Length: 219
Image (cartoon, rainbow, N blue to C red; front, side, top):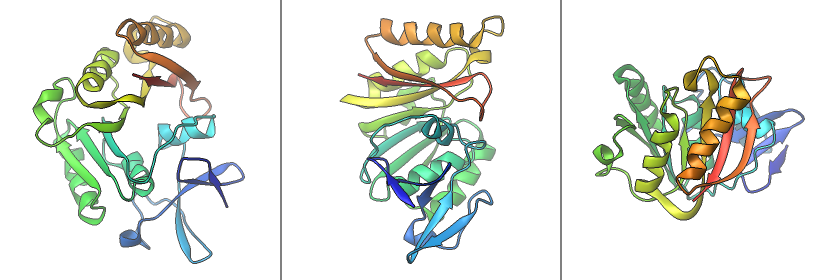
């Protein structure tokens, strides 16, 4: 296996892995494959289950340090959260999710992965979880709502450290079902730029996800 530069991610041909936390050795999160290599244990990261994995396989190159603080908006049941937890083993993943059912699974995950902080909350109202979330190094958002760009902008203004990067997963159909995906992505990018953010890259997630793109910004 070869370590991907600056990402804490391991590659073997066209597959990617994260190294399982010491406290979670032998444990799976979503029935992923575990691989042992030179006394270490790695978890296969499925790009069909994680948009971040899809973006990485399609060329995403963003630095996530092992002590980073990450704000994850739209954490769901924790598939991608768990892999970020592996990467930021000395940091924290503040995981905001509006579904009580999904948060229950996040809580169970956090009992084994102490760097995951599950938060039942609405990302439309970033001030409501300010008592739990500090200024962070990166914001990752995967929320399928029409106003997803506005949610991203308001959370960046409230929580993101200056001169930092963030990742927005754009679902074109949630923006406007009548628009072609590229036009929907460009609409979101324009809104982000009009708020003062800089677009660093835009990555289509095909063939892993249809009508989705990762937009990488800096503030």
